[in-house]
Image 1 (tube, rainbow, N blue to C red):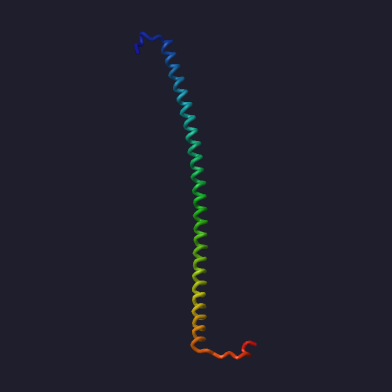
Image 2: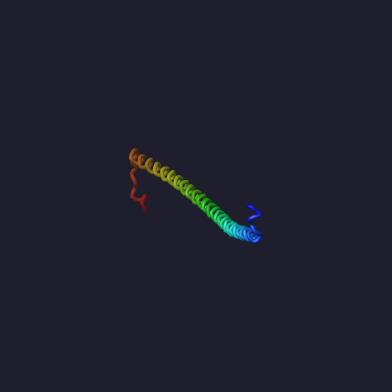
Amino acid sequence: FNNSAMSSSDLESMLKHALGRIDSLERQHEEIKASVEGETRALREDICRLQKANKALQVSMERDTRALQDDIEALKSENDALKWSLKRLASKVQEGWEYPVAIQPDEYW
């Protein structure tokens, strides 16, 4: 700037314009800052909710998995018992064929 060519009113006008622009930018900055803080807070709350929901799902899945494992073990035991019963029945039938026994009519009564 050529100070001799600029009047004090010109400088004052430029200064007021610059200060007004600074005020405007500071207000925009505060609005953006408040908006970002609000969004950040909302995202943190969402993360917290999602973590709780995820934990609840994990607990539920672990409980369901244990229940299914218990069911599988129960079915295996039942299957083993049925196999054992079937083998005994087969051996009794086999014995009956190999050693026929005359059944007396009074054995039914």
